[in-house]
Amino acid sequence: MYGPGEYAADVPEGITHIEDLPKPRIERCSRNYLARACPRCGCRAGRYAVTTRTLHDLGDARVEQPIDLLITFSRHRCLGCGCCFACELCVMACATLAGCEMCLKAHEEALRKQGLTEAQVHDSVRLAAVVAGATTALEFADPVAAK
Image 1 (cartoon, rainbow, N blue to C red):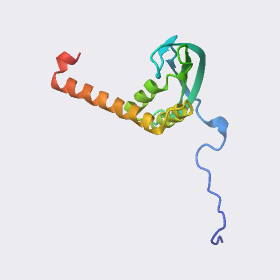
Image 2 (cartoon, helix red, strand yellow; image 1 turned 180 degrees about the horizontal axis):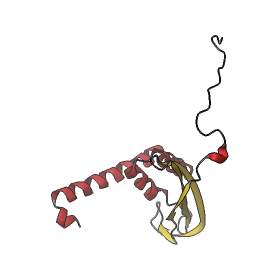
Image 3 (cartoon, rainbow, N blue to C red; image 1 turned 90 degrees about the horizontal axis):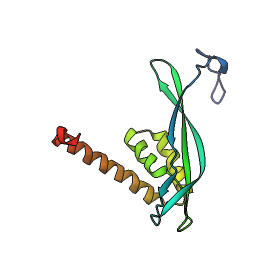
Image 4 (spheres, one colour; image 1 turned 90 degrees about the vertical axis):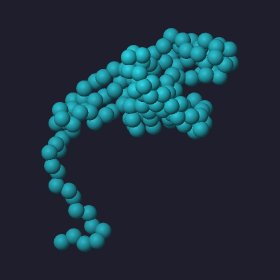
């Protein structure tokens, strides 16, 4: 008999070996650009590196297959002010509108490492929400003119 503080192991149900897990479906997404505008001074910032990040998602519960998102993104350096940045702000706006909390946390962490403050990151999220709301309102007001 087990008493307080003693560990009683759970009975394994379903998959007990990691080899038995379903293989993930791989989806690729590219945020790789040759040049972008610098967020500080607006000058042309050329690409100096390309990085790939893997995000694991549970996927579709109906087919019981996880998804691995392979996101390729570019890093840029401004020739005017020397600022180094990645294209995370536009990707964070997309993640905000999609409602993916895991993506939001990953992009927020990357932006904070680039030197943006918490307020600046939150402002970008609020701006994306306002633009999406305005777009929805315009489509609702006149669906023919919005297209």
